[in-house]
Length: 243
Ligand code: ATP
Image (cartoon, rainbow, N blue to C red; front, side, top):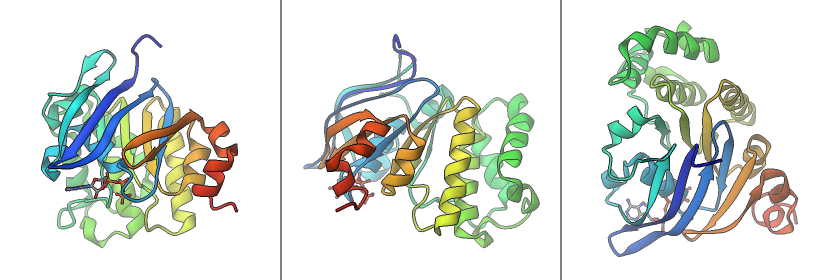
């Protein structure tokens, strides 16, 4: 692999005295979908925040370790520089700008990016999510939950990332809508974008991913090919609800 893709090495994170991650290492090889499974509070969102450098907005700090994309260090960069370097983060809970129109939300996603590339990026997200073209002038807050999730993903894609960090994209969505989002994640990946997917819906995540990691109380306890983890008794019992 030779350092290509996203590499997290021995990353530890604290929120004040609370240690949220302990020496977490993982890789998202170029072009892959990698998932991180874990129960509530395991540290999944913290991991994505540490990569996107938005951790400080939540009162957290990286205490050790490093994050690289294609051999370039990302830790130490400001969040907008991480986006410019090729990593876009769709945080949990969608967080679209609800009073702004769909079109303005998408425009916000491309700020700082290459101006010349915007029409192409917009055409791509409209092709992936035709509903966003139909609703371009509507306020984002009026969209359904699933459509808001689409908008959040689309906004991140406007920066034309190499790696997309997705935090619980299926949360709170009806199964059919969750499946639609999953199908689109696969399509985005097939177009060449790597994906680091954090999910509580382990069954859905393991179908999408090539590799998976299990995070428990801030530590990686299991990792391997997604199909292997999906077949393991431990994962089946704890995360797939198979008794
Ligand atoms: P969830 O799915 O519930 O979001 P998670 O696996 O994403 O869970 P994190 O939200 O990353 O877990 O939380 C990891 C640990 O860090 C937990 O113990 C949590 O209480 C703590 N934590 C998270 N955010 C903060 C914060 N802003 N301040 C203090 N502690 C926090």
